[in-house]
Length: 130
Image 1 (tube, one colour):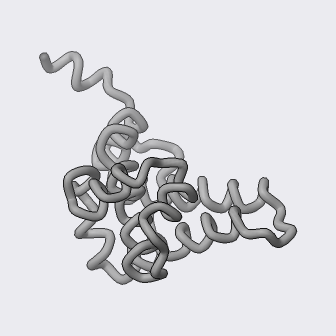
Image 2 (cartoon, helix red, strand yellow):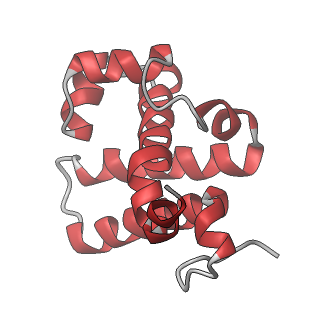
Image 3 (cartoon, one colour):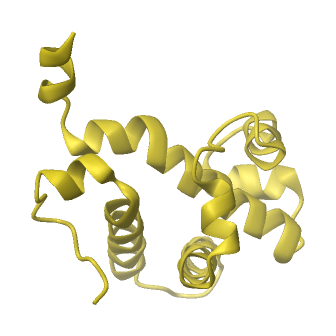
């Protein structure tokens, strides 16, 4: 029904489609680039090892994952988010609020760049690169 599509908020699209791709990309970087085990990555992301396996194998969150990992700008953003997650769970004294804010801002920034519905509706949280 056309009305249902118009009623869908940009962040609903993100939660269903884009965020899983971001999470999958972060899981991939943590395991494949940073050398963490799937169990450790799952613990850091508050997921199960099976979910990490599904993300890495492309069974889940695959819609934008390839684009994120093949685009240098997006990949650097994903690596930055992965580093923030590692820092958040490190033993050192860190300001959790600052790291969480940086992580959330990074996720929103990347999500906004690929969320076509948000772009079409001029979502105020979109910060397109110029």
